Length: 320
Image (cartoon, rainbow, N blue to C red; front, side, top):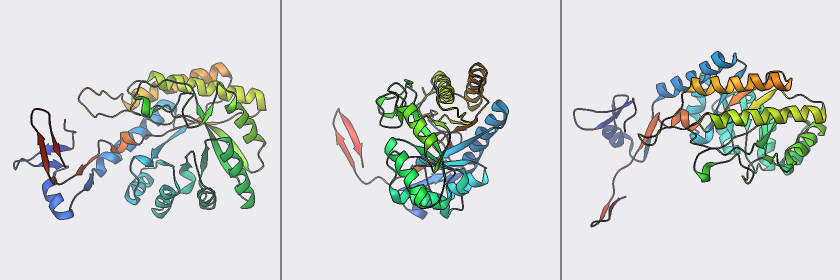
């Protein structure tokens, strides 16, 4: 299965964007990552265009840097007007070294260290996505010591069963990520965040899984999250104006995989958000999404050199 940027040349060699992969391997050695910058840029532009056309422009796609983080990728994301989602101090450092604007970075992770939190605060990171009550307390404490204020989103488990592999589902109640709605923990966290001295609760975040090929789970997640934002408003008197719906958009690994189009996803989710906000008497929030794999997954490949071949007759052949 070849992507549109891959071809076989007259020598029988695989090429990417016209570059002979055999020659690339000889010149640079292996293993070697080879990425198509034009394809990465075009996908970023499609995500931005979809949000602008379907939702009215009050939204921002954030590149999930865990998919592929290096200074050059961060530079491209900056130039394309994307936001960035980081999950470690190392990813944040890489982004800062690339000159990425800190105010467009959202700092994720379920085990942020005090040093990472301090570094993010002094760097001016735009949002912390808070995963648990211990982190909420720690972030408030460190923010106070540094005389900073942290803008936060709470990561919520919406209880949505994304139809994907069980190891990459993250929105169900037994996920290790985020606050559960069913147990009341999410509301407890929202109240604590509102009352914190050095935190500003701006909105909510969810991420229901990866490699998702259906739109309905995203629609359900948006509905659940907006229902919770309504409940928080009732309980605290605070209306939240930001909603991060995460990522998880599937890409092709086999010919049977059929990813949904960016426009179809954004159109359906936008309709859900508009309808729910009208029903729940909420103002339309700023929307964030977090594509990662879907931006870089089909934009490149890794070159290897075969070292040895082991054949087991009538069973299989191993290539190392």
